[in-house]
Length: 433
Image (cartoon, rainbow, N blue to C red; front, side, top):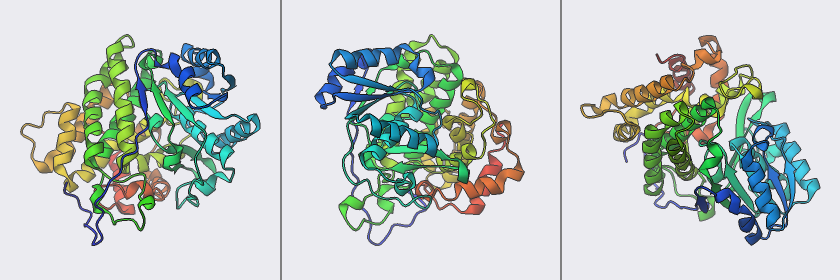
């Protein structure tokens, strides 16, 4: 794979794969009692949010756990788009409850909150101690966490397969997170029937998170473009594009290109929901290994600075920019920028997404991929760039200042990114059609 990053003299030659075990299929949620029992759980924290908590999927999970002899303690006050405060509140509850395992049933916010509560109740410390640098101290997780079974109800974040927990830091007007392989759930239980009741707006927003995860993973800097770490244990969780992550990413892009619009436009198209859910898990496995880059780095600024936007399907949650929207509104601009670093990869991703690349030249790769993404956004009712979320060119300096600290992500791009580049990217992302 070609890239703008120069190959270091002490070049990395190794990538590692440490995937979360996966159980996928209709009825998988009804089996989690046996799964939890096999992990030694007896007193279980069942994490969800108020909206999902009223759905059949949570009742199914609770019954399965109780039928297997578990004592189940319900935590249903997870905040959608969590904050440092909501993470701390969940951790305090888990510590006081004295649970010996976690089950999360919900979207990325629920699964990430369970990860943070598990960490902070098992190894108590200030949240920022574990947060990625330069925002936090990037303290290593001291040791193993309690078992966690993650059960997604949205086809989007892939959080069930990753060691990442993302939250909003309102006082600093940015989003950030914790990244450590010990945060990975012990088991991902993916039952696509749990996604059938999602509003169309949520399907679209989370579905585009699938696509950006996969495309960013496939176009990330190659794993061998970085220096070899001082010790094997120092290899970062985000290692760069590699042959293992490439396979899952491309299949996730293909599935998303085929089924996302169908799922978002027809709530009764269960085939589309099933395949989109599987794509989300594939993309999670891929980006959890290779990493994401510019669209996600920009997204933390977009979401962190706006708490007034009301997205379709998220009306109950108040003002916020849902994660999938905050990412994909940047993606067409970002991929136009990164395409010259590896045009072959951008064209391959565009073709997998459903674009006609028959006569496309390498210097057209970014436009072809961006045009296909923007067309899918338009057809599924997503905002037409940052302007429809409420941003103007006057907000660009603040957006850059909020995105620039996300160096862990920006470093994964296939070419170097400057603050001036970010300003241009936010400007290009204001409107697409």
